[in-house]
Amino acid sequence: MKKWNVANVRAAKGREKLGCCTAYDACFARLADEAGVPIVLVGDSLGMNVLGYRTTLPVEMSDTLAAVGAVSRAVKDAMVVGDMPFGSYQCGDDEAVKNAVAVVKAGAEAVKLEGGVSVCGLIRRLVGAGIPVLAHVGMTPQSVNEYGGFKKQGKTHEEADRVLADARAVEEAGAFAVTLECVPSELAASVTAALSIPTVGIGAGPVCDAQWLVMHDLLGLNEGHVPSFVKQYAHLADEAKRAFASYVEEVASGTFPPA
Ligand code: KIV
Image (cartoon, rainbow, N blue to C red; front, top):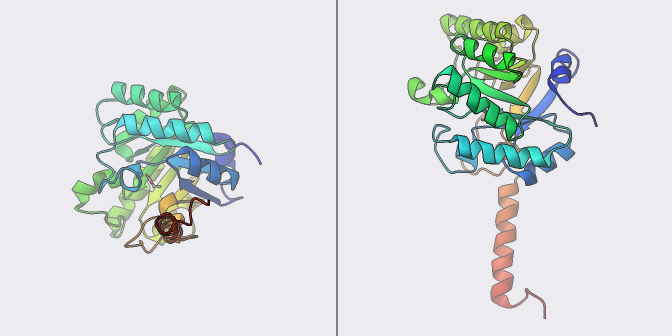
């Protein structure tokens, strides 16, 4: 297995499609790494999947740093990307650089942050400081209150032009890859063709250079509504509940522990 880094992720564009996912703890990060996942994102979706929030907005730097530390101690070959939580880079560029440095010191090899043209100055500073940046355009979940929900972006000509302009701008600012979240697949195809850096899609169709899946979706750990773009490759919630119930039952009936 090779060690994934900025250079070979960039070089994979047009050659190899990368199936990437999130992880938030050492146990699942190690499993993903051993299975060959090339990029493990400590996403701010940690807020929903681990901390029980309804959005990513409440996630704190301390949550991110703990999770990045756990994940980076567990993986060997995957590249670890740390998501900058809401408020950690909207607070002025000096503070944002300090926060990104903390994410790298915790073990991330790159940071991800949301926004296009509006964050290009910060991307330039981070890249200038030696911190690789994976950008994120299209539907940016930290803007949920602005959108009035997690809504697909880029559906009108005007929105599509803005997504393309954002993607071009983050490439020009030095991002090594860009997440395209919840945009029409034709738009994702145009952006992917227009950029020389890889696009990592989620809810953006099959043409992107790479894909994200949130680990809890991929493994079927989340119950309830499954977004249409998600594929569950396992149903671990059912399996886990079966195991808990058997344990409770065996203790109650005296079968466990054995005599
Ligand atoms: O936090 C997250 O899960 C993300 C997705 C785009 C993968 O940012």
